[in-house]
Length: 340
Image (tube, rainbow, N blue to C red):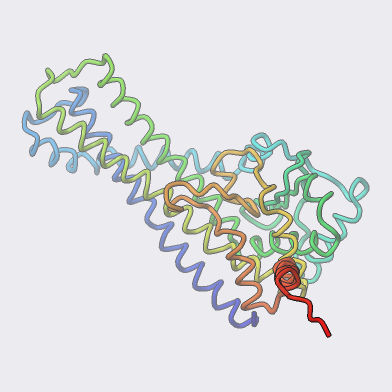
C-alpha cells in the first residue's frame, strides 16, 4: 500500500475517531438522564406526580446534575491517565523485560523504532502460551508493547518483526491513545448503566416502589432502563468500531515498516485460533487478535483474520502460501494420471 494512501487512511480514521469520541459526553448525559428518571420512579427524587411532568423535570435537572457527573468522570479519567499501564499489567500479568534477558526481541523492536526516529517503547512480556500482543500508552515516553511467551516461541524472526511493526504502527498512528481513552469512557458509562440495571432487578425481585407501585412509576423505571441500555450498547459499538477500522491499517503499517507482507500473513495464520488470552474486554480491544464476535458481529473488536489476510494479499502484494499449498494439494488430489 502506498505511503500517501496509508497517510490518507490515517487522517480519515483519526477524524472519524475524533467524531466518535465526541459522542461520549452526549452518551453520558443520556445515561444520567436515565438514572434521574429511574430514581423518580422509585420515589428517591421528588417528582411532579405525572409521567410527562417527570420526564420534563429530569431534563430541567441536567444543568445542575451534569457538572457532578462530568466531575466524577474527569476524576476517573485522571486516575486512568496516570495508572492505565499499571491497571493493564495487573489485569494481564505483563512485566517489563530488558535487553539482557530478551536481546533478539528487544533489538527487533529497537531497530523498528529507530527506523521511524522514535523512542523505543517499553517491552513487556506475558508468561502465557497464547499467541497475542498489544500496544499501550497515551504519550511519548509512556508507550509500551507487550507480547506473550507463546507468540515469541511460535513465530520466526520475520513474523515476530511483522507483529512488532503492527503494534508500533498502532503507536505511530495514535490508535493506542484513542483506544485507551475510549475504553475509559466506556467503562464510566458501563458502571452507571450497571447501577441502573441492578436497581431495576432489585425492584423486580423484592424491592419496594416508593411511589406506591402505580403504573406511572413503572413507566418511568422502564423508560429509564431502556435509555440506559441503549446508551450502554452505543458506547460499546463506538469502541468496537474504532478498534475494527484500525487493525487493517496497522497490518498495512507493518508491511510499510518491514517490506514483508508474507511475514505478516504467516504470523496472522499462526495466531489464528491460538490467541484467547484472558483479559477484560477493555484490554482485549487492544490485542493483535480477539475473536469474540458477540451478537451477529456487532460487538466484535477485530475483523476476522481471514479478511485481514485477504486485504494484505489484495493491497499489499502478499502471498497466502497456506492457501496456495492447499490449492496445489487439491489439484493434485483431483488430477487423473494419463496412460500411454
